[in-house]
Image 1 (cartoon, protein in one colour):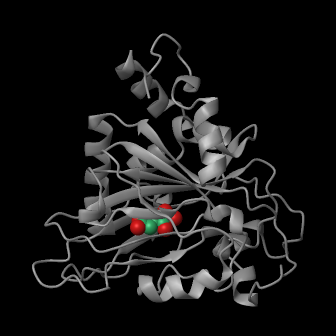
Image 2: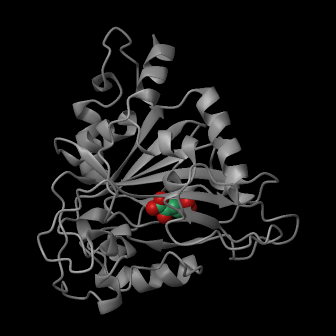
Length: 305
Ligand SMILES: O=C(O)CCC(=O)C(=O)O
């Protein structure tokens, strides 16, 4: 894409054609959205997080980070890094990502559902095995307590990323297949077994596409888009921050949609609605902020001009 640096807004970064592509294919890859300095700062943020350092006076969303086994190639992740790290907070609440997410969801504005800080360590010199994999899954399989499937994930690359270091892969058009059964399968590491699980439910062809990203590019995928990833066969960690977002006005739903197991009708975010949540109650408190912090947007647009 050619940047129109004469305009000052986000419209120069995501066009109507890009939005159509997202709606057809279920994902869209942005141009570089972070400056080199921001990428460097987020890499340092990762290191601080994995050392157990926290900013501010608050607490972890899911309790203290478990002791990390740095020799394991298994993925490590922290949910809601923005609660405890200032740099992650800036990136996650960025209006740059928020406005693009809203444009792709075709809604007036986006709110944060939650974030994830994810590191896929190097598989080392031995055979990679399955332990660094992320199983083919649909994000909405975990989010069925919300009243819309029109949710989105922004995967922010903190290094050049391709299949060699375990890039995410998406299945083209799979968001048109609806919610599949047993697709809360992030932790099922056998990608070919999962393909066998999903093939009978598919209403289109199995077309994998790697999300090849330069550092600072962001891939946006629909909550029903099947995606997963393989091992990191390089010597360096593969790092990202993911921003999971929803349209303003998204509300809680208690009813169990067909095929939804009771455990999946619950999400830890539901407790943030208070002790007696009710169907129709909006996820609109400060736990689910509007994605409108202009800091990153200012810095990036300044650099582009
Ligand atoms: O980092 C990965 O390989 C998977 C991330 C993911 O599942 C997501 O961002 O929704």
